[in-house]
Image (cartoon, rainbow, N blue to C red):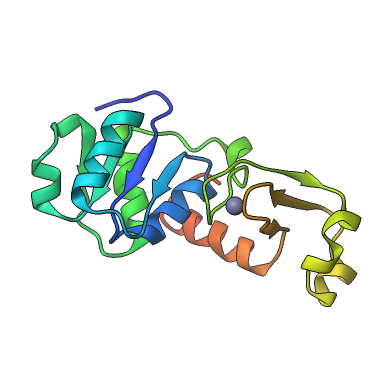
Length: 158
Ligand SMILES: [Zn+2]
């Protein structure tokens, strides 16, 4: 199947995949305590593709509205999602969405988030982004570099 700018919904067992999808810019909901019934309802209401490793859950929806994941590794799962929808990673969208809560993140002045970043970051970084919903602050650093390296390791152009 091929879908333009798809939106996703991870079931409660693939929350780590949600963070990776958001990292590369895709809209992905994940409600940790959601039951199968809730997942089905939200996916239907918001036109989201369900990502799950649960055969029963996948069987309850039309094939084009769910992807049954094989891998237990979130990066392997990301590869499966990208392959099954023939998605293209847009580098301009990497790190535009909060990996924790799925909201858009935007550049912020260092002075506005100074008290929320560790001292070593204050000394070495000047550019920051923040999530206006949960308040998480993002900056270029080793964690980010490691994530990009893992994506390149599975052949994704980030
Ligand atoms: Zn957030």
